[in-house]
Length: 407
Image (cartoon, rainbow, N blue to C red):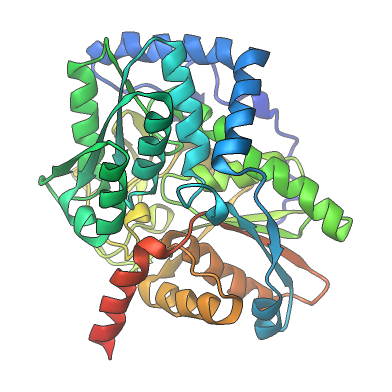
């Protein structure tokens, strides 16, 4: 793909006034939620222009979350590949263990500004749930987190962490018992308790203003990475790579580089057991346009529009749809998408742990697999930044169990 011919992007016109990124995005919710979404959009529009709100958020991100995060040169991983330099943006070093705290803190502050005293959230891998529980504990807000029962089993550590910080974790037994079902239950709760409750959606998905708002709260990732790589190398990277479920960590890294036409950007989806129906969560490898949970975007569905089953070794990527802004930039040829299978991820999980002494989240390891693949294909004068969006403490027991079964 040649990005040199990509026209300049007026980033700040995206989304448009109706919440659309081209044909994607929008607002597809019950009428009972329209007022709440309009109230949220108006509150965010004021907050994003308020120096007081921005300064308070910046202070919390520094003192509580631990920003800025390091841009780390993975020297042994680079040596192993024999090609391009691999840098890791260390979002795993943040408090609660992942990039999710950026958005959770910001939305909790916004909820307080709106006078909401009760917070609900959904979570897949548990990292957004943990971040939301931490933010609510810090600000004294009631917290309820919805989580699929299957995800609760494979992420038991994060369930305990949430409860330890005072959150009520409600298991969801419907359907596949994963992220999609958790979002369904959170939206039902919001419809019922809309006056007192704010829904902290954890990714760059859903109805407007969530995709825009979550993107903006994660822009700090790319802002820091740009400044750090210029300080370290004196130039910008050749490639950026991030895993993509809903797409919050990826758009957070990519956004500040969108108007740099020579930088290749790749989002890596969950290839699961391979691109067969029900065996993966790679929306761009097997999906098509549809509407799910408030948003029009690429999603996995059958010929009758029914949502297909998904699978990934990583709970955070096990979702049938992708954020609308990613779909828009994919159409424009500005962001490419690849996938990594479970087996490739498990191999890279061990490789990074052994060579760098860093245990990555299974979600993040999808990006690391592709970074290793690309580094081997590129010359030594090239530079790759991969977003290490979370740490793998939560995944160690699951991986040990899988590897034990594999012998």
